[in-house]
Amino acid sequence: VQLQASGGGLVQAGGSLRLSCAASGRAFSTYVMGWFRQAPGKEREFVAAISWSGVGTNYVESVQGRFTISRDNAKNTVYLQMNSLKPEDTAVYYCAAVQNGSAWRLRNADLYTYWGQGTQVTVSS
Image (cartoon, rainbow, N blue to C red; front, side, top):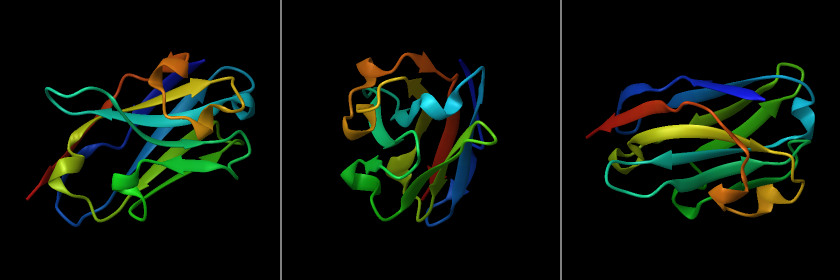
């Protein structure tokens, strides 16, 4: 499967952005989808994940209550709605996919098989 992330940009603190990740290929609904981010000089960090059906979600504590992950299996797309953005959210955001039904419960980037190219999110103070 190929992943194409989009929706990044420059926003002021307190603002919102919605990231999208479009998947090509078959059987999108059988993939757990995740969002990760990497800030300059830092390691890649788990942000959120969603189960095949969309019922199960998992968030890193720093974004809980501000970010929402969702998916539309009919459109082969996963979204990350980001509200109340903070300067510390500045990073390149990556979407990822894996055919492992339990992966959404975990936060390990090594579990994911496919990765998008990343989209830059910059939050100014």
